[in-house]
Image (tube, rainbow, N blue to C red; front, side, top):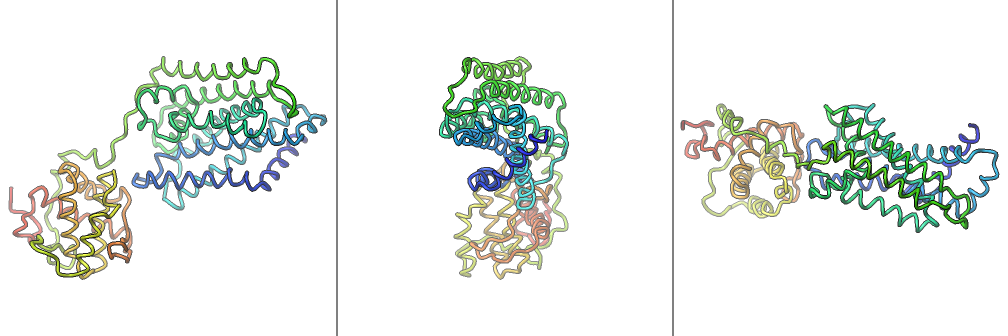
Length: 449
């Protein structure tokens, strides 16, 4: 055990001195964090639904690239040939190498979680124990695969090739890089034969208030079975020297490890776990017509009052150059043209709220321009649900705090923008639903039935 721990700490020190290892071990996970955030920025809360994918990418990269690259490069330099002379069983040295890689990958995953919380406000996991167990099961699976890759690879370039053969399929069609719901049905079925899908399911459950214990048990057994089978094959095929050939039966051991993948997928298929995963509807899309009908418009401030000013319909051209520039920029403003229509509507309504809170001289005209934009740019059903979402769920989604490209450089508090957006959304929705009469806007309500 003393030799095991000495080798463990030696592995950690050598990793800390290797710039390339630090870049792959810590900079790449941070890069993937920012990349995912740029794609899923409109989700509420940000990145909560993608943390399982992010962590699996980190574990997969550290185990299937970092571990075998280290072992093979050390073997090429004759390090393991010297280790063979030590009075320590090979199993102790391999275990210490695996433990060192476990510490490296877990610290990188912890860095991702903390940065996601600090930078994007991603919530902490709901179940810390489930996250810890999921990380351990995933590490068993992928470290076993990494050990097998190290045993099969003749040199470091071969590690890259074999690692990519594992990494890319799981990233592209294995439910790791691309969400299962975004994949075609055939790809979702194929993903059931890969460990990445089960790792993502388990780790993502840590951010879910409720989870299925039965599903977690299947995921855990699948991951451990795949990792143990690959790890046994990797130890059986382990080579001490770079010039040594692969042991006899290498192909059989590799195929045996692959057979466990097939067995796991077959069991999942038989148990009905490979049914197609449908994309989850956005929060605003689930708002029912009955909820929209229950929204009231009494006691709204008048359009000419100090709060939530709204200019009458613009019959002609704008006079103020500031309003003209705002109208022109609004047509191409990216936060108002997202694929998520509900979030786009929330962003546009926030512009009117920002102008009102900052007491812009064109606040009334800007609010009217925003209303004209949402009324003409979105389908009626999407628009009514999006505005109702702003009213009924003011704390959901993200909210813009400034738009310097539109002349709104000041940034009021987020809470104030959300509260003011409710009033503007009510004014807009009331007009869309014919509950507020444009001829009598100062009443703040309608006399229509």
